[in-house]
Length: 373
Ligand code: COS
Image 1 (spheres, rainbow, N blue to C red):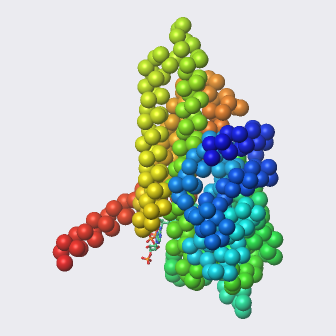
Image 2 (image 1 turned 90 degrees about the vertical axis):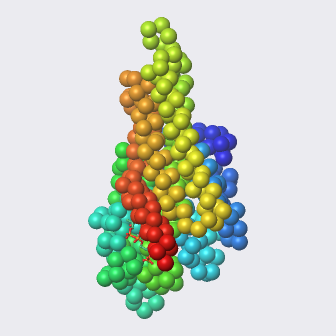
């Protein structure tokens, strides 16, 4: 993975620079390395779903290329709902192509008025014969321009909150689906708004049971949130490497700045925080691979801590670089911008804390209940 990232992806990332395109050459390098297979079961052309392998891959890719990292993540976000909720036909139709990287996917959950509060989504899917008619707007859809297909969530029962949401597979080019605009983030990647207007989606594209989409969405985030943490590890590691190298070379008052504790203690903090986050990420991934049941809490902890850690570590790296660190075109400046969005997407830090706290309190109540009975 390290070799793929360094030898294949890094030169391509440098060649294309910051972009909101998804260059086919990067996809081809990933396909050739068989990287998408780590997200899919063996019977459908994958190597078996592995959270640990996904985290290792994202940690390696994010050091050099947001495009490659986001593309792997979106293949998981769009593919894993089919793995957990798809029927045999859906799996046979889509998973081998996703595993081979011959189809690229995305995940359309967020809306202009529904980010953290998923249950307040306004998109609707109304049954009409052998189709559902989808209407609604999905915002902040990563790789949404490039993706050939995706999983979209919409209300099939408006009165039942998160119990009235269903998941559907959509494909690019469906009548009534338009890709409305590209959204420019502070660190670029392919990010769009999708508009569904009387879009007829075959009923056979529904994933899982009607009104069962919320659980599918959350199960998918259980796998992918820890991997956002892994991606943050890569970003932080890149920043630490740059800071160490710079501190050994840069001299002030006749000495390398690494000889001053004001700098070297920062390096110690960065390395320690990075390893602490790494342990949280790989604990969650290992538990998931061992089939230890729901890993919602561990995944949220990994995402929350690792992304916040990356924010702190990259900030320290910029500080060590001084004036050159805040200069456009410097790698450390780019990492500073790249580290920000992961603290927001796939559930903000505050949402992760809410999830963790709710689960701790629920476990405590259950223990109390057990003692009383
Ligand atoms: N796996 C399986 N089931 C899950 C689950 C998971 N990880 N998380 C929740 N559920 C189930 C619960 O067990 C509950 O089931 P019952 O109704 O049968 O009891 C149901 O789903 C509702 O769960 P909960 O009550 O926890 O949902 P809330 O509406 O209170 O809270 C939050 C949901 C806020 C945590 C959720 O909406 C969320 O994660 N929001 C952020 C969304 C996000 O990450 N957006 C970014 C999109 S991707 S870029």
